[in-house]
Amino acid sequence: MSTLQGSWIWYELMTPDPVGAKAFYEAVVGWTVNPGTPETGDYGFLVNADGQMTGGVLALTGDMIGGGAHPAWLGYIGVDDVDQSVSAIEAAGGTVVMPARDVPMAGRIAMVADCCGAPFYVMTPTPPPGGGESTAFSAERNAGRCGWNELVASDATEAIAFYTARFGWTLPEPMDMGAMGQYQFIAHDGVTVGAIMQKPAEAPFSGWSHYFWVPSITTAKNAVEAHGGTVINGPRHVPGDDWIIRAIDPQGAMFSLVGAL
Image 1 (spheres, rainbow, N blue to C red):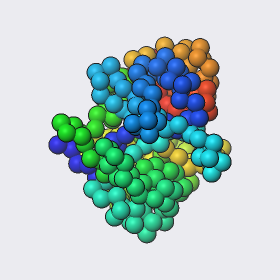
Image 2: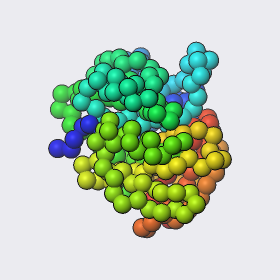
Image 3: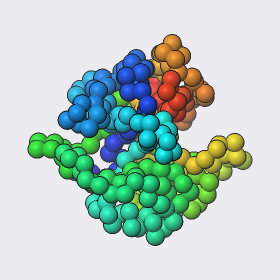
């Protein structure tokens, strides 16, 4: 059994148009996007071919957008105690975006921002009867799962200290990117789950990017463009046999994909 504290357990698309997002991501990633219902508080779900879920879809209301919310992908980090984690995050220079609350049949969550302003959720899940561990992340190719979590931070050194202290992540040997600095890999339970790097000057803010597995980056790129999205970077080869693209969906959320060419 993997350690909950520090694991990536869920990914959420916040969008003003869940119907449009359903059509787009089903074509691009291959998920079945189950729409929200009154029973789920209008919260939808991203379902893989094997029936397991990678994350959810939160419909942004006018009030949410008026309060500063915008289309985006956010990740959930599992913790043993949400309230203790929130207190520790605040003590380390982070902030609370959405106070801790209980979600029926899901668990306790809070939205926070790290020491550099990058938002994410912390969650202590309450699996339903017969439920097991999250399958939202997979370090190996597994279509529809997240395969990489990458943070660009305004102060990478501070961010690395923040996350390792809060979540117990370990630090494999970094990759030297020359003028761009160190690409510091991060690991949980001995599995490399992503990396932290210094924010390039042209990047507007610190933030996490979550890369979802697809069978073919070429096919996914074509589908992004055919269904109203915009590819902003790639296809680009990364160490190993994988390729990546970064794109913006028709509703304005930036997202990333990884897979074979």
